[in-house]
Amino acid sequence: MRKSGILFHISSLPNDYGIGTMGKEAYEFVDYLEECGQSLWQILPLSPTSYGDSPYQSFSIYAGNPYFISLEVLEDEGLLKKEEYADIKWRENERYIDYGTIYDNIYVVLKKAYLRFIDNADMKSSLERFSADNPWVEEYALFMALKTVHDGRPWNEWEEPLRMRETAALRAAREQYADEIDFQKFMQYKFLEQWERLKAYANKKGIKIIGDIPIYCAYDSCDVWCEPRLFELDENRVPVVVAGFPPDCFSADGQLWGNPIYNWEHMKSENYNWWTERIAYAKKLYDIVRIDHFIGFERYYAIPYGDTTARNGEWRQGPSFGLFNEIIKRTGKGNIIAEDLGIVTPAVRRLLKKTGYPGMKVLQFAFDPTGESEYMPQNYSSSNCAVYTSTHDSDTALGWVEHNKRRDNKFCREYLNIRKNADIPYALIRMAWQSTADIAMTTIQELCGYGSEARINIPSTIGNNWRWRAVKTDFSKENADMLRRLTEICNRKEK
Image (cartoon, rainbow, N blue to C red):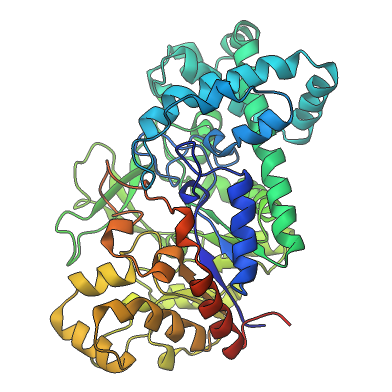
């Protein structure tokens, strides 16, 4: 069935507390999606962020970001007083997140809620049940407690007994930092509780959530610290090689991502249990799962650790269908979108076809004046794909056309039969919705016709990404009526 929706991360929701949360504004956005006639809400990874604030560089593949916990909901539960959070100046500008201010204040406020929580015997027993139902939270809570007492330093800078996970050192740490560990568990409990309520509300409204999981783990993560055997690390648990992308016409030095590479042979010897458990959990958390950098499962680029560019890396063979065969056997075949952007080799195409997963088409890549681009809807070989007007890594449609090559712009305007750049966003939405793709997605920025000032991320840069937020006036009835009617005309609205 043909579907459509909006890509819009939790962090970009409007409110008075510096960053979007799972509070009333999230529910209002679900209502807005319904008003727009949409059936899909795509978000970015929900994991806790670290230096750089990227949701793709997290302390854990399982944990949720405490920043997204609604303080208003905690107040409703009697765990906070209004003045304990409402009197804080959370932001300077309603359009941009100030992560420094969030970091300095959110844990102080959540700690107050935690102290009231543990005073209630019934609430405390619910935390114990949560821990029993989510085994991953024990190691994560210990990891974050240790980061806290080490002033946020990465685990590879801790004292050797903890760095190397010696049994006696871990036992002592669990006893010494028991209260901080329980605080970390509390935040995860409240995160998941609020998320499950929000998802249930969306599902009741006929809206499915598309979640997102990065291919790689951050080196400074609970996952690498706890299971070093699954990564290419030396005897001192230092990476041997790291992930990235080779030099190309866009970057003479390539891209140095820095994530440790998986030890695929060891993962294979364990029947890819780590991956199947990860996908199974993601399928519980979301209705549909987008797997980032799908091409990296067919072949991946490995760069010697310590190199300052990606020039000396090499391509290596990935696990290919061996991994996905196990994932399909144990978690089912459906409800996955493969982000197959990049250098798509014949082997990647074969892997995608074998899995049956829909790949991605981004319309900003479509306007080659030859008309032969695989991203141009007239060239789609199958409806089993998801088409996007733009993504979190690209410019907005208006920003893209304003900074694009003049030749491609001319072709774009001719193809879309428009004269002004300002008409590009809606024209691309219409183009996506009219395509044969089973899934069509746009963004709030596109719906509002915003330029580069509303861009979420510029890959390979740090310091000013992941900050953009919507304001309440962005969710206009005029745009909702327009998108709803287009969705009906293009047969994407559920009957």
